[in-house]
Image (cartoon, rainbow, N blue to C red; front, side, top):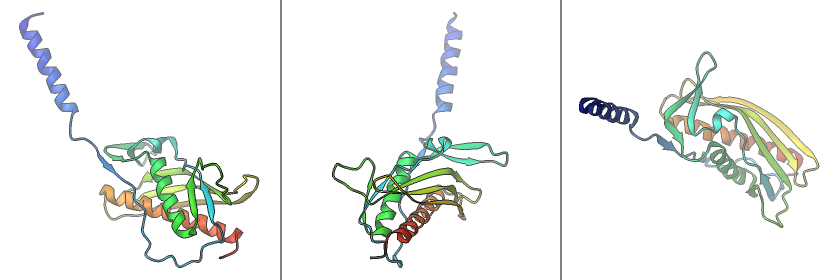
Length: 197
């Protein structure tokens, strides 16, 4: 190999490395929506277990997912969840449930001696950025008795939280609003099963 060939190979390698490296992706933390007032009375329940939120396989990727007109999933390489999406959604859901239920909400596995009166499971079938920059969510909420022997309620949801911006902050705010809606639905289901305080 001649000296010129070695120099050319080194230049090509340097160019490839420089082209592939760019600014690191921006990471976004999912924060709960803060409602100023909880207008509804909480159900008479003091201990709830929350299973980790289940997301579709494509949404378990930390890159922000959307889809095109051909239903193809597209990932944004520059925008990522700071936590894994299932952990972030579970954390925010637990926060909102504590607020609406005014009860202890512990994410499973719960400690020995903790006896929940109900268990909440949320499974998302869809978690996508939609065209306006907001979020599209659908899935199911299952409310199970604390001992796991009785199905208390099953509720399905499908909604879009629109945004007026393609800024990633708008997407994460829309997801947080959707999680808030899910927590309200779970609280309503528990209120129907457990008498009011």
